[in-house]
Image 1 (cartoon, rainbow, N blue to C red):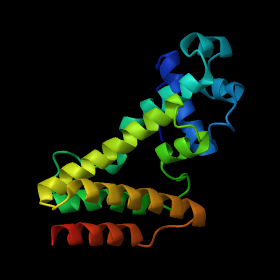
Image 2: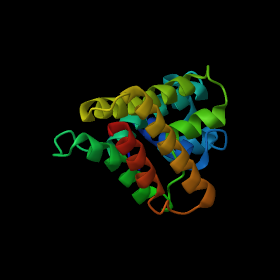
Image 3: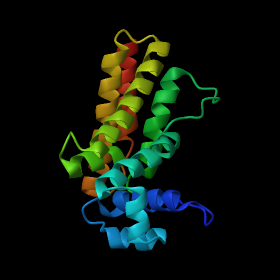
Image 4: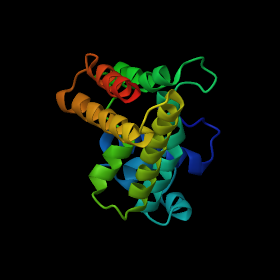
Length: 190
């Protein structure tokens, strides 16, 4: 969970509170007053920094994006083969799925709730989702997959579908995400 230090700027406190509340409670369910109270800032201060709530939604998603990716991706210095690097993402997903506080992929959640591909936050969500797909493609390329871009798209779909299933059923994935990803990777490398 993102936590802004007490010494964080007003902007950082708002972005951190927004990222947390929008993920946990939803964008439309989080009113400006609740958000400002959680961040410890006035509505006036918020609107001085962000012209609209929509601008804040997009900025908070961009603020949370790097930490979200860091949570799932293995450390760049980790001594792992490309196949293991890919499966690491799904192992992390498996460890989070079904736990208290896990409500799916923040990027998919935002885009789905907004239902507007032209919304600034939808663009941010697409960008971060594409970054994951591009990362999968780079790993697939390094592993020697015949069609790394197709494999990357398939892996992203497995990731998103697995996260949605965990939320829908309110329980862990029991290894299904990892075994499905492994089957795709192994078939692409055969």
